[in-house]
Structures are given as structure tokens and as C-alpha cells.
Amino acid sequence: MLSQELDLRDYFRIIRKRLWLIVGIVIIACGIAGIYSVYIKNPVYEASTKIIVNQTPNQTASAQLDLNQINTNIQLINTYKEIIKTPAILDMVVSQYPKFNLTTDELMQKVNVSSVNNTQVMTLSVRDNSYQQAAEIVNAISLIFKQEIPNLFSVQNVSILNEAKVNPPQAPEPVAPNVLLNLAIAFVVSLMIGLGIAFLLEYLDDTLKTEAEIEQILGLPTLAMITRVGPEEAKAGEQVAALQSRKTGELEHVTVAK
Image (cartoon, rainbow, N blue to C red; front, side):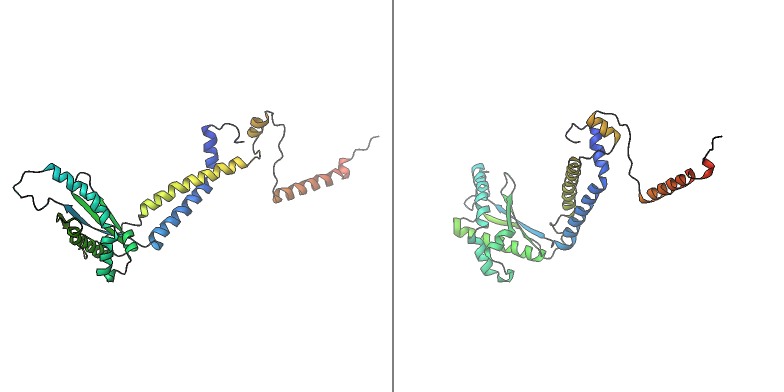
């Protein structure tokens, strides 16, 4: 039936016909996503610090603004972003802070460094299942980075603008999992899957169910229809047939010609 072109009414008919299948798939998928996000997935917290690449010490406070120096500092941020995530910094964090109980590779996966375009500020963030540990880790990395940069570049142009608060006044909210986002993704994906299954089942169903379908496919009018009879209807029909047969054999239905 779907081999022929479908109009908009046919699509609505197919959707209405298998609506419960589509709704069931959506409800099950959203339920699984909600249970996973709330009860199974461990919450992830994020703590961050801000680091500024400022002017070098040989520039006095009274000197005029040197755009070339600022551009140089901005370009250095890209270099610093890569250095922070190298063993040169993280190995020292692991060795000096054994309480974190992390390897260099594990620590590297928790660290993320970003910067705003055309600024001298970069943000160092760490994600962990414990907010307190995330704050301690990001503060430790920032401190080690500030201490080691003079040894790597022979400059002292890095300052920490703010540290992460280990014990904030308000309980921090986890950044993952995002329950609403997971539910939205589950809803959209399950809806697409449900619609796809509904149209696939309709495509595989090659039976003719109505007079209109017979006339549309074969181009012939319907002369008669044989309906499906249930057990109760069949039993009632047999009783009626037996009653009519018994009445036919009675004498009152027989006429004798003179």
C-alpha cells in the first residue's frame, strides 16, 4: 500500500493507527533516561579558577599601553593552555598532592582550559564527583602552574585572579548529568524511532482491510464482504439456523394439494 504516493491524510492515518505504539516507545525511553540521570549516573561537579597573563615586570606602571605586548601575552595563552595539561605540570601535582589518589592520565582527563577571545584571562576548570576535591585539584594545578612557569619561560607574568572555594556558602549544583537535556534528547530520539517503526510496520503490512483500499489498489468495485464472526456471534447464528431448519420440517409448513 505504501508503494503508492501518500498524501498528508495517509501519514496522519498511519500515525493515529499506531499512536499507542509511538507513545509507548516515548514513555519507556524517557523513563529510562530519567531513571539513569537521577538514580544511576553519579553527579559531576565543576570548580574553576581564573588565571591572567599580565604585563612583564620590565614594563613600568607609568609606561604607555603597549598593544604589541598585550598581543604577545594573548598569544602566550594558547601556549600556556597546552602546558597546563602536560606532565611537566600534572606530574608535580600528583607527586605533591598524593591525597588526590590520581594518576597523571586520570588528572589530565579531569582538567579543561579555556579562554575568551582577545583577552589575557584563561579559565582552568576541573570536574569530579566531589565538589570539594574538584576545588582542591584546580587550586593545586593553578598554584603549581604559577610556580613552574618562571622556570619554563624565565618570566613572571602569570597571576591567579581567583581560586575555587573549597567550602562555598551554598551547596554547589552538579553540572552533569543534565536531567532536562537527557529527557529532551530521549524524547526526540524515541519519537523518531517510534515514527520509523510505525511507518515500517505499515510498509510491511500488505493486507487490504477496507473497501476503499481494494478499490484503490485493484481498481474494481466491491461486490460483497465477508466479515469476521466472533465465537458468540457464530454460536448465535448456529442456533438461528437450527431453529429455521426445525420449523421448515414441521407440518404446518406443508400444504397438501387436492
